[in-house]
Amino acid sequence: MSGGWNTIESDAGVFTDLLTNLGVKGVQFEELLSLEPDALAQLHPVYGVIFLFKYPTNVPYRGTDKPLDGTFDYEASERLFFAHQTIQNACGTQALLSVLLNKADPSMSQEGDAGYIDIGDKLRDFRDFTIALPAEIRGEALSNSELIRDTHNSFARSSPFVDETQRRPDEEEGDAFHFIAYSPIGGTLYELDGLQPAPISHGACTQEDFPQKVMDVLQRRIARYDANEIRFNLLAMTRDLRIRAREFADDDLLASEERKREAWRFENALRRHNFVGFAGEILKGVVSAKLVEGGSAYDDWVKQGKKKMEKRAAEQRARKGGEGEDVEMQG
Image (cartoon, rainbow, N blue to C red):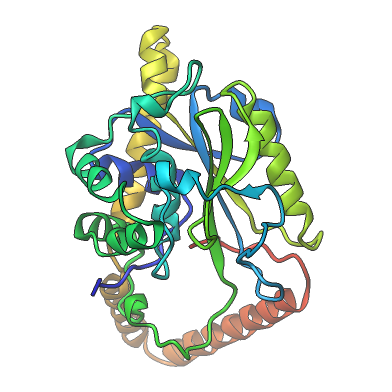
């Protein structure tokens, strides 16, 4: 029986450090703010993309005979690393592993592909053990991997009030989001979604074709949503940009990428801590200061705080009454 999996953010720094902590070398993620193929092509070589979207609850999601776009390739699930998702909150890590573990075998690459990734000894052992298993058993093996689960959970936001790993089945939730992967593998563009019965083929695709073809697929997918739905996120898995900087002796790019990594490390360190105790100490200090002032200072301060909270709550209710509200996307 596997332990629980917490929610992690769709964030380039989170995914990059997650892979680094799993022992992967020479890979990073970049967030894409545009669906223009050139935005992806500029990051060459690109191993695949991770797409986050709102999970549809008003229509059937899992295909039976055929998906909404593309075709099921059941034979591919035997030779690719494709795993069924068997546990909640694991879809982000499962999506990035769906790209990564299909780039770990040089024999799967064609000439011109982004190529081989050094996934490290531990993930290589995991892949070697699971690649011969059926997709549903691979999903169980992934869910029960302490290495992958513990690394994944180390990037969850710390909360002293919520234990997502113990969520009750009947507990009401807000909007749900889901991660899937797209990658050119062996000359075919595949959609790798653990909630589907098999990999979905979107036709022949070379490495050079990938930016245009995957963006066409994503545009069609997004077009199926209401025009006011804007909660999407797209991350590209690329070769470490510091390698390119060193190859071309681009000191400015290298310095920029090193600063980015430092910022990611700082942000990820903050995610591991909750600041309830810190906030409590500040509040006690402010209360003490107001009491020292005497008179009505304390009561006036409390009344002012209540007015601000009431105003903030009213603004939040007004925003919820509108359409197209943008929120922080997690999965």
